[in-house]
Amino acid sequence: MTKLDINTIITRYLKDEATSEEISLLFEWVKKEGNQDIFKNLVKEDYQLKYDTGNWNSEIAFDKFLNEIKSKKASNSFPLYRSRQFFKYAAAILVLVASTTYYLINSSSSDDLNSNIDDNEISLQLYNGRVINIYQNRDTLIQFDNEIANISLKDGILYQQHLKPSKNSLNNNLLKVPYGKTISVRLEDGSTIKLNSGSHLSYPSSFSNESTRQVALQGEGYFEIAKNPLKPFVVKTEETYTRVYGTVFNISSYEDDEAIEVVLVEGSVGVGGKLRLQEDNLMMLKPSQKITNSKRDKNALIIQDVDVTPYVSWVEGVMSFEEENMSQIIRKLERRFNVSIINENKTLDERHFTGAFDSEDIESILKVIKTHTNFNYVINGKTIIINKTE
Image 1 (cartoon, rainbow, N blue to C red):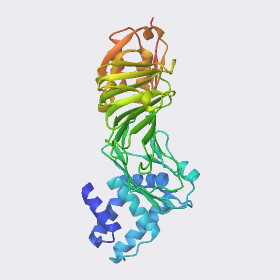
Image 2 (spheres, helix red, strand yellow):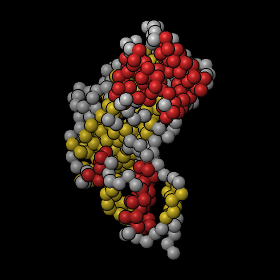
Image 3 (cartoon, helix red, strand yellow):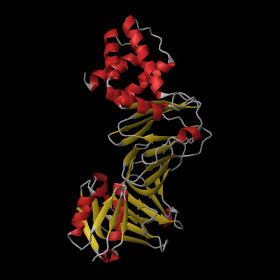
Image 4 (cartoon, rainbow, N blue to C red):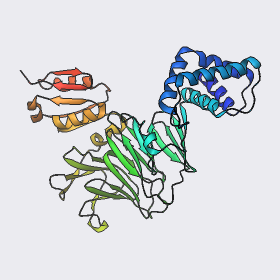
C-alpha cells in the first residue's frame, strides 16, 4: 500500500466515508511495528495536551485504539458515530502519513501548552501567548477562544490564513529560528521574509488597522516587500529604522555582530538610526548599495557601493565570506551549523578570507580554509576546537 493510498483511506475514514475494506487496510497498516513506534511517540509527545487536559498512557491508548478497530473489523459494522477518543487516534495517524497536524486548543493553559516547546525547533508565539513548534511539511489548525488560525508550512514558507485577531490584543506574533535552520514567512499583505539562523521576527497578524506595515527583526532577514504606496513598510532593529514602499533588501542585525548592515537589491529604501526616525532624516539607498551602522558609533551611518551577491547568497544556501576575519566566519559557521567553535589559535584573527561554499558539511569548509593557513581542529559532537599553531 502506497503512502498516497493510506492517506486517501484515512481521509475518507475521518469523513465517515471509509468502506469496511478500507478500514481493514488501515488496521493492517497500524499493526506494523514501525508505525506503532512512530504512533506511540507522537501520541506521547504531541497529543497529551493538545487533545486532552488529563493524563493518559500512550501504550494503553494504543491498545484501546487497536481493539476498537479490530472489533469493528470483525463485526463488519462501522457506525457513523466515532468517539472523541477514537477520532483522536485516527487523527494522529493522519499526521504520520500526510504530515498534517490538527491541534485543538481550548482549555489548556498557556503555561501547560508552552512547556512542551522544543527550543531546537522553529517556534511561533501567537499574539495571545500560545506557542507552537513549526515542523517541515506539517499543517496545523489551531483553535482557541472561538478563533481559528490556519498555519501551514509549504515549500519552506510559513503561511497564516483566516486568522481572526482578538480586538483587545495588541501583541504581535513572534517567530523564532534557532541555529541550524532557516524559514520564510508570508505576511498578510503578500510580503515574504526569509529568516536566517538565529533570528527573531515580530510581526502583526494583519496590517488592516495600521497606517504603516511595521515588523521588528533581530538577526538576519531577506525581505521581498509587496508594493503599497499608501502604506509604507517599516523594519525596526535594535539600532536602525528602515522604511520602504516595495523593494528587495537584506538586513543583518545580530546581537553579537559589530555592525548592522542593510543591503539593497532592488527598489529604494531609507535608513536611519535611533535618532533619525523621521522620514526627512533618512539616508536613501540605491540598488547595489550597503549602509552600515557601527555599534561603536551608533550615529555613524556609512553608505558603500557593493556587489550584493555575498550578502544575499545565504538565501540560496550558499555561505559567502568577503574579506572577513576568522571571528566573523566563526559566528556565521556557528549559526549555520548550530555548533560551538572555540578558537585557541588567535593568529587566525589576523587573516582575512574571501570565498563561497554551498556545502552542508562544516568540516569541508574548515578544510578549505585550512589549506590557506596553518591550523588544526578537533570535532567533538557539536563542539569544534581550533588548536594553537605548533
